[in-house]
Amino acid sequence: MTDHPSILIVNGPNLNMLGQREPAIYGRDTLADIEAASRAKASELGLTIEFRQSNKEGELVDWAQSAGKNHAGIIINAGGYTHTSVALLDALIASDLPVVEVHLSNIFRREEFRHHSYISRAASGVICGFGLKGYLLALDAMAQLVRPD
Ligand code: CA2
Image 1 (cartoon, protein in one colour):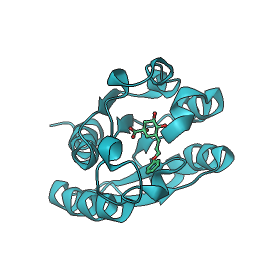
Image 2 (spheres, helix red, strand yellow; image 1 turned 90 degrees about the vertical axis):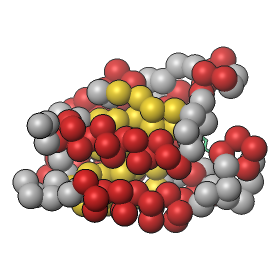
Image 3 (cartoon, protein in one colour; image 1 turned 90 degrees about the horizontal axis):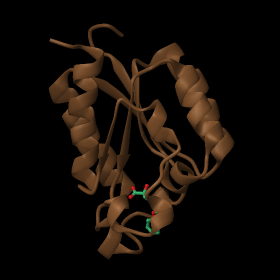
């Protein structure tokens, strides 16, 4: 784990539909495309990743709670739960791991209710508005957090 730290990349509700609807907001990349690009980027950075998606809040909470057993950091796009979930915030804080929050869209150019993220209080930083590239930027940031030079 110290040689190639493992990063848990968590995707929340509806992100499994990427590429099928709303391309004007979320682009044409599928979640599988994001996973493949993240895997390649992680390998360049000397990291490994585990890439997951769930539509269930409790499952996201479970993953955050147990992440510390096998992972050195968490990158999370919590989807709609970003704007609603105190439970996910609590679990991310309890993980005691570095967290980078990512969003495909620029949530600040969108509806007012998307401007607030509950989970940002657990995050070292937030990246939004760069589509798939945001996940790669998050990995760059995470590499620094888990292995500062
Ligand atoms: O911009 C992001 O990455 C979001 O986390 C995406 C969430 C949204 O609720 C957040 O405010 C911002 C929604 C993901 C839904 O993804 C879809 C993909 C294709 C079709 C419909 C929804």
